[in-house]
Amino acid sequence: MKTSDRLKKIPPYLFVKIEEKKAELQKQGIDIIDFGIGDPDLPTPQHIFQKMHEVLEQTDSANYPSSKGEFAFRKAVSKWYQKRFQVELNPRDEICCLIGSKEGLAHLPLAFIDPGDFALIPDPSYPVYKICTILAGGEVYPLPLNAANNFLPELDKIPADVLKKAKMLFINYPNNPTGAVADLDFFAQCVKFAKQHDLLLVSDLAYSEMGYDGFKPHSVLEVPGAKEVTIEFHSLSKTYNLTGWRIGMAVGNKEAVQALATIKSNIDSGAFKAIQFAAAAALTGPQDCVAQNNKIFGERAKVLIDGLNSLGWKLFPLKATFYVWAPVPQSETSASFTEKLLGKCGILVVPGNGYGTAGEGYVRFAITLPKERIAEAIERLKKHNIKFS
Ligand SMILES: Cc1ncc(COP(=O)(O)O)c(C=O)c1O
Image (tube, rainbow, N blue to C red; front, side, top):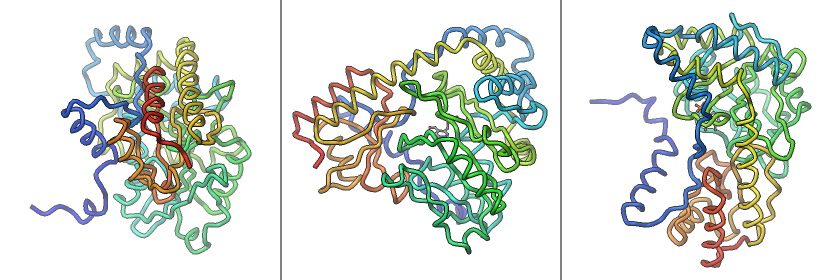
């Protein structure tokens, strides 16, 4: 058996290795405090479950769904975007349902990238943008995200010869893994840049509903004229604690949404109908569950950040996402510090270099565990004299 050259170009998915390591230590009886994968530990709101049960009873719920999404789901997305961002979207051709936004982000390069084309991809970033550009035969041009630049890419530093071959620009704010946020001015610059250089602007808005202390993230589509060049991805995973249900959407530029829908219709047969109807109920129903989630995540972020700051870190309060991006002490690398935390303290974090070369020197904490466990992690750091210096 001979696998493809394509397969040789990609690593195993970041979390596969981390989950294996965790299982190995748990087998040895070690109590792991897990800040690893960002999977909400809070329950899916009851009214969403109820809708799911109702729809399951309907006889046609087991049939093939429409691959770009049931019209009722697309209408709910359109209503939600109007209410949340005052953005108009035509449910007929500006919205496509996804089996989780990861699926859509992964398929998109197949619709836009030919061998030799470039995609401009933040570094560090959610690994799917890079890996699926490579799988489509494209080249990745990394855009370093540094603390000095508030973790925003410096678009004016991209060389002209790269820009000539570039087809897509990925952005993701609120950002995984850095927790950084961007304002509408930055989004307007990206739209202008995409228009100037004939790029598809790909906005990953997976964390738009996780804002703290009154911070409400924007959609790129709020920028006037953005729809001419932008496709935006959104996910219900984190907003409504249903990562395993696999439901999200791609919206915006009609040609881009339809191009993705064409790829998808040839590969998958859409998201399970019952999930689509339950997701529509989530988007159009009461939103107090989102505020309750954010209250909990906001408190957890404070416990972690205050705790780390008491040990020498100088982290700012978290404005959005459930990720805390912490620099490692000077004598450490991302990998050595991750190993030290796991080996000495039983604390699992993700090494920053797993998200790209510019992530070296950082680790990511996902605060998807109760604040008592976060406080316990800080105690373990103190006990083992682990400080930031
Ligand atoms: C930045 C970002 N985008 C997209 C996703 C995918 O979310 P889902 O496929 O569950 O919708 C994630 C998941 O962690 C993410 O961090």
